[in-house]
Length: 384
Image (cartoon, rainbow, N blue to C red):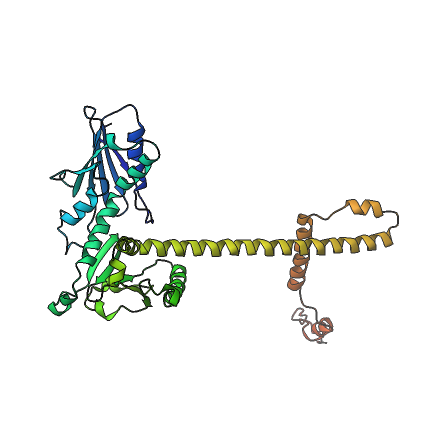
C-alpha cells in the first residue's frame, strides 16, 4: 500500500504511547502476509509519523518522526540533542536503531527490527514502548533542561524564563532561577473557569498539608508572578490565573525525574480532564434532580385530578341517582380540560369588550341630547 494517508487526531491525554501508531505497528507485526507499506500519520500537536517497509526486507520497519520541540531557543530547530537520541535508543536497544541522517523533513528516523520482538503478551508491551517515542523525545528535552540548571546562572543573567509548549496554544514557563514551572490557564467557557479556580484553590490547600510535604509546592494566583515580567501580553492574558510548582533537587533525582517531567508536560491535560469530569457530574446530578421533581409534580397533579373527579362523581350521583357505575367509566381527557379553560377565557375577553352600561344614561340622552325637529319655513314648531 503506497501513497495512502491516515490522518489521526489524538486529544490531550495521559497516555505516553500513541494509540494510532501502536495500532498500525501491532497490525503490521501480526500480519502474516508481508506487504509493502507507506503510511503517513498526523496527530494532535503537529506531530507526524511516516511508517515504511519493503516487500524485499520484511523484518525491518522504518519510522520517521517529526514533532515540535519544546523550546526552539534551547534546542536546534531541525535536530535533537545527543542526550535525546540516547534516550530514544534506550527504549529497546536490540530493536531500535537510529538512522543517520534522518529522512528529509523529519527530525528522527528509526529502523525497527521486528524479528527481535518476543512473542506473546510481551510483544504488545514492546510495541507500546516504541509507540511512545514522541513522549520520550519531549520528556528528554525537559529532563535535560532540569538537569543542566546551575544556581550560578542567576548571577550571569541566565535566569530568563524558558517558554515551553507541549500542546498547541498551551505554553508554560520554566523559571531556572528557582526551577519554578508556571502554567497560564485559559478556558473558553466561564463555567470551566469557576470549576478550575475551585480546583486550584483546593490543590493549593491540600499541597500545604504535612502529608504531601514531599510533593512540589503548588501556588495559584490570578496575576502572573514577578519572574514573568517582560513576557508578551498574549502569553500572560488569562482568565483562569497562573498555577506554579516549585521543583527542588529531590524531585529530579533518579526515577522521580521521569515522573516529575511527565506530570509537568500533562498538567494541562489533567486539569481539562478534571474540569470535564466535574462538569459532567454536576449536569448528571442536575438532570437526576430535575427528573425527581417532575415525577413529584406529576404525582401531585394526578392526585388533584383524581380528587376533583371524585367530587364531580359525588355531585353527579346526588343529582342523578343510578348513574354511579356509568360516571366511573367517564374520564375527562386533557384536551377537553384545555378546551374548557379556553372557552372560559374567551368568555371573559368578550365580556370586557362589551359596551359599558350606565344606569340612567338612556333617560339623560333622550332629554338633553335629542336633536331638534325642523319643518318648512312657512311653519313654526315650538321646541320642547
